[in-house]
Image (cartoon, rainbow, N blue to C red):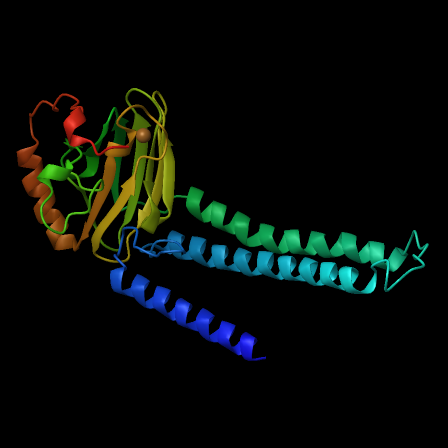
Length: 283
Ligand SMILES: [Cu+2]
């Protein structure tokens, strides 16, 4: 008993330490040290993904515990010493019905919220703004057809150029800017090879395929900076094409769009830049 209570105390203390550490380091829109769950959600879709994940976690935990208990019973009660004469039972109809029906019920219980979530992700509500994202080797380009049809490139900031507070491997020069609480329709394509546009806090991940226009959507419910990365192996500098989405108020967005329209008007898109070997961290 004493051992058990000590183990419980150790488990509780460790849990509390990890929880407080993750709370202290928790950054909205980016990974945090000691994080064992998903990144903090900032969109309705990600809220649904997170609760679906929790739901599945408890179902798998219950199944694992149930199997573990069955195994323990078998080990204790039906070993050769405790049960020298084995049972010769070959069929048990009620039991067979139960072990067929129960998994079907569990799968149906998983399928219903799963399909609901898929439909929410795939059916784009009426968009407030559209942003066209193009994956290139090895940076992203963002175009705003609704706000003056300007376009700009967003390239990686190397370690030596980072300003204090900017996360390593996740910082870019020009961020994608969107207004808070607005439906953003994201059109995604690739210019050269397949990339993948992924922002965990918004629950979006979609391939950027050359010659094909994919689309997804998100509604950011909080202002802040949200980070993502290319999630399709696309070549040497795949790890150096982060995605940064800055969510601002509508007024700030309009001010930014007006400025950006002038800034990026008639400018030739910069040529693809490759990260110099010296800038890349050792792998
Ligand atoms: Cu990539």
